[in-house]
Image (cartoon, rainbow, N blue to C red; front, side):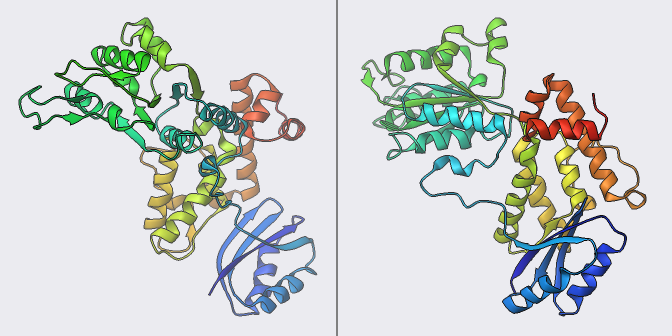
Length: 394
């Protein structure tokens, strides 16, 4: 049986959930999930019969205080095949700004430095830039600079001649920078490179020539370098931990990816996307997040960013026995700093309002102006002013 979702707008009234559920129960179909928000309800029902769907919607409409009943589709958009950036989900202004800059940078061949915390999707951006560039017919080569010791990393990047060191392959070996001709090399965690390796890479980027370890002949190369780091390279330069000339050579086109807590408005979209993805890939029955669970996700600070959210949703899909993922099914690796009263004793509307007021106050405190805070929250300037009046926030 297929599932479809009903969106019901109503004016607050006791017994609304009971009355609507009683109508649906007449048709002997399963209610897979139920979400209740202030003046909104979402029912997920197991039904493929179009006539029954229409009858349910027709029977619900006359219930007192119901304003509107409609069928809704999944809000997660399918990624157009011709747009590499469509795989980066989000509508917040901070993310859109980063994507806009990345699109422009993709058209050229300048070196790009992607900045952002761990788990924000730096490699996803790098791949999208490569695929949107004129080099997209050639290969994309990612290298984790923190995963290999200096000597091994340099032999991987620059290659080596026969007999360059003990154990060197007969005939030598071409390095990644040589193999990646006309393509893109992504240097991830570039802040972990040693000063010695930085000096060697600086010369390669300046001259676009490569010399294998143990060799004397220089060979011209044609690669684009995209680097990324979660570290503050400017402070590292001041402390002498990162070469200043190498920093400026990398920082031709800087792109900063916002953390997930800076784009809270995108959390519901991402959560629904990952939920749908893991339900399908793991062969699980359809599941849905309750409004309380979603409120927790939106309020959490996400030190691990999008990667942490992705892992949490996958974990919840695996460990939730039923079809409803509630707060108790969200297994955080750390502790949740959100302090709420007992859920059984407080109406959902009150919980949502408390969370909304808290998030708005934090955004105003951080950004210092209503206009900047509204952009960060992903809502309009007038909408934020209206909510500030509602919660008496000055």
